[in-house]
Length: 218
Image (cartoon, rainbow, N blue to C red; front, side, top):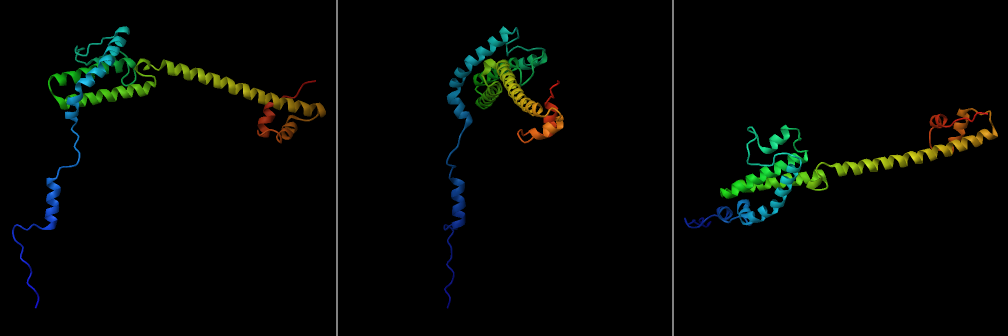
């Protein structure tokens, strides 16, 4: 005779339900709250951006450009006005300087209003823009116009070009000397015949050799 099934009491949960319940009640192992983090580090951020703001104001002032991010420029922000008068967005050093000042203003305004979420967002945008400007310049914010980079690249390219020209001229002179030695032995040979013979010594095509060598005139 088979034993009757055991009756479950109301207080006896199923194993599957117990597992799912533990998953719902246990908190995740790690939670990172950006707002809380920024609250404890806001003063550090303001200290870091202070010299950047001073540098941006000096840059704009030295270039006779406006530098007040709180001013209304005919309904435009400072970076928008800088762009309108001829400084390209995401390219010009002056535009980046104006963008630094505007983003710093947003961060400071949100901190004063105790809007930590917005302050953290604008702080992230400030860091992103600053990193972008630095990567484009390769020399830091002071060299955003890339004059130093372009000048160095230009000089390096010219030097390399001159060296390549010198190397090729020496190579053609060597080929011409070899051709003249052949003509000294047999002046009746044509340029094509000499080019075919030189093809065993030089890696260039017969056509190229024929175009490069010059038969001496008697």
